[in-house]
Amino acid sequence: MKLVSRRACATPLAALLLAATSTFALAQSATVVIDNLAVPVKDKGTLTFKRIEAVNTNLTKEELTKLFSGAASKEEAGALVKKLKAEKISVPEIVFAQADGSTTARELLVSGVNEGKIVSAALKSVDGKGKAKGGEVTFKAGAIELRDLNMGTALAAAFSGNFRSEEHTSEL
Image (cartoon, helix red, strand yellow):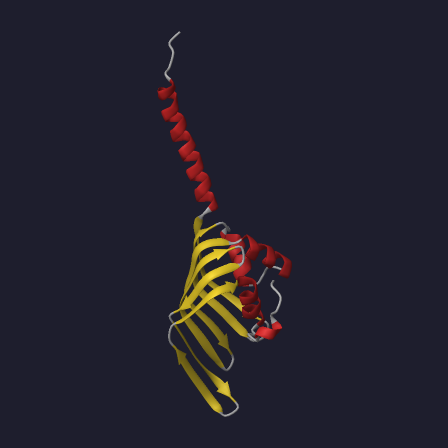
């Protein structure tokens, strides 16, 4: 009977463990892409995400689609927000189209998403046009950066179409 040294056994075992943990890590932190997601916003218009790319996220494409489409119930959305982890989420263009105008946000980059909390969210620009009591209105804004956000509150405001902070005092 021929004996095999511990070192000879350790190398293949180490390679197997490394492969197994790498596969597990990839399953837990993948890049997920969703293209052209259009979401109706409670009789106020349509919110269209041209592309959503979540890097190193723990959610599946189906879970992210459910979350960003507003298709999840309040309870499901809350659970997904609390579960969501991502190094970054980028959206090159978001358009909110209404019957009397539209608003376009460009180059959204959300960083450090961890269980409902966001380290930072930055937009390169926002512009829009629409109608008001006095006639047509246009606006343009440059770069905007926000820090230490609550994702549940932000999504609740986006899907309701109402951004008044006093009406979103609770999380999803």
